[in-house]
Each structure stands twice: as structure tokens, then as C-alpha cells.
Length: 449
Image 1: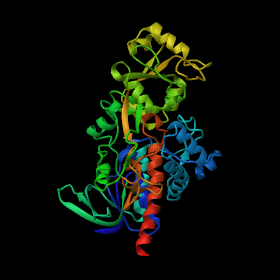
Image 2: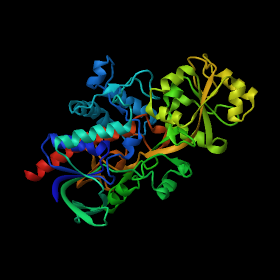
Image 3: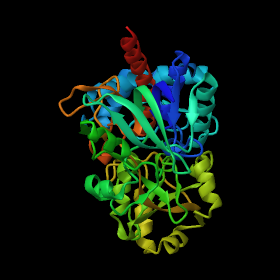
Image 4: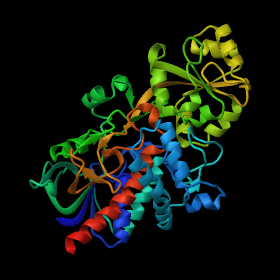
């Protein structure tokens, strides 16, 4: 088989790229290791941040790419790659609008703002799950003519001495190898969250953490790029999550914290400002006794949380506990009731507390609680790329026909866990896939000229 464009990985990034290429009449094959597309996207909430989309405008939300970019850099303390921040925030609305034209019925998430966002810009399908997003993207891409090759584990790239990729070797379930030739290759496949050795080397704070990501994030994209002389960037950046229900192994939406909930450790004390972000919260939770905490919230927040399928699943798994009063909550946590009572009494409207958080309201009994730990979800560093998603070599020059986006490439979270703004992963995937497709089309046109 030989195609103009081969894409390794059929998550949000690969499917978005394949759809745009199919729209342009360019033959494309998606190489997917699993029996059906899933990856990090399917494990996410499926919320895509974009500023200036048709859905935002229809909802009367004032926002633009410049405001979005400023929010990203503020969260990353100015350490996010400026060229990618500008490229991704500038392309996100067009990418989402194009997906909408192919039948993805996006709406803008309402009711609360995720930490660091200055406007409501999370685009979600009615199902509010990453699995629904992947399924919709697959239908759109294959319906437009992209070819999806499943159960094909990419194992090897062939390239000439100039770094021009000519083929991909894919291992099939029976052990045979399919070789697919291509004029352009897009790496839309993975980060390295599932590679224990790489996590220990680059993300020591997550060495012992639960991994909540996809097994396919084994670092192979980085390995292939390195073999071709590619540069690497921001390997210390990642998305953690401080609200992973234990032992159920389910995500508890951070909307619980943003609506007034708090995190309490085994000593009955709060230990950070929960509104700063769920990514760095993973490190804070893991630093507590036993590496666990309790999400504590009230009835109003419970009603909000039940609007998220992940929470509903966790509740079905007996993650949710309800306590009539402080004494019962203290018994559940195993802490001193007086200490817990003082902690909750301080979580009230007024001046900023000792952690810098300002509360809009106090929590009221009965209390609801979920035991959580910190988890690693996906990495935010990888192959160095330019604003067109071309992979750069170690001197900063683009390789001839290798592109990367999503988990395979550096993102827009800087080089630390605290730089992750909610939605940065799907921003890099969807906006990056949209841009990579345009770059691939331009490279093909140049080859034919």
C-alpha cells in the first residue's frame, strides 16, 4: 500500500487531520493499534477549548484567540511555546467549526469556569464524554473517505539519509508486518505516560502515581523522532489530576471544586487552593499522608456533578459517601472532629484564606465525600515542532516530510505540571491535527509542482 499521507494514531488529532485531508480530496490512511479508535481522547472528558467558534457566538459569549492565548500563558507562567500558543488558539475555532459542519453537535459547557479560563470556551458533545467524541470523529472521517486500519501497531519507520520518511511498518495481530509507503507522515499517536522508565526520568514527582492514561502512550513517537535527529522539548510538562477516585479508578470532575468543594487530608485539614488547577493538585494530593485526600462538597454541588457521566459511573461504583454532620464526616475520614470542624468553618465567604482561596459560599450539611488520589493522565512534552506542526531537528530545521501534533509533540503547557490549563491536551490534538493537515496538503502540492 502507498498513500500520499499516513497518520499514526486515530485519536482526536489523527481523526481531525484525516477529516480535513479527506475534505481536500487527499487519500489518507489512519494507522491505529487498537481494535477501535480510543487513546487519550476516549479517556478524557471530551471538552475542546476554542475561542470565537460559531457555538460560542450562538451562546452570546464574547471571546477571542488573543484572550485565550493570554489565559494559556498566564497558567504556564509565560513558559508555553509562543509560536504554538498563537497557532493553536488561532486555529481552534476553525477546527471546531469544521467538525461541526460534519455533524458534531457541539455546545459550550455552561455552569462554571475551569481554572484559568476567562470565558466559557469548552466545547462538548451532548454526551459529555471523550468516548463519544472519538466515535463521532471516526464516523466523520471515515464517512468523508479516510481509510482506517485498525489492529495495526506501528513498529518501524523507513527514512533516507536526509530524514525523509518513505514508509511505516505495522505489526498485525498474527505477527505479520504490513509496510505502508507514504509521501508525508503525521505522528498523532502518543506521549510517554505509559512508559515507566521515561516517567521516572522526566517526571519524578509522578514516579509512584497511578497512571490514568492509555497504554499506547509508550513514548514510541519520541523514539522514532529521536532516531531521525528530531529535537525534543518540554519533557517536564504533563497533565496530572488530583481527583482520581480510589479504589474505583474513576475521574471526579473538578467542577466539584470550582463549585465550592474542598479537599481534606487524613488530618482533617485543607492543604492547597483547589481553584488553581487540577493538574498541580495531583502533586499536592500525593504529598498528603497516604497520598490520598477526600473531596468534600454539599448537595448543590452534588446536583452539578451528576451531570457528568464519569461522576455518575463513580457513584455507581460506591465512591460517593454521604455524612449527616461534621462528626460523621470526621469518622469517615478518620480525623479529629474538632480539627475538621475548624477547617470547614474557615471555608466561608470573605477574605482570602491561608491558601489564597476566596469562597463565594459556605458548605452546608449533609456533606458528600469521595476518597481520591493524584494521578498522571498524559504528558505535554515531546517532539519539537514549528507553528505548522513540522518536526524540527536538533538545529531547529524542519525534517522533510515528518509532522507531529497532539501527544507526540510538545504542547502549550510549558515544562511543568502547573502550566497545564484545562483542555490543553485536546487543544493540541484538535487544533494541531487541523494545522498538520493543511501543512501536509501544502507539502504534497510542493512535491507535485
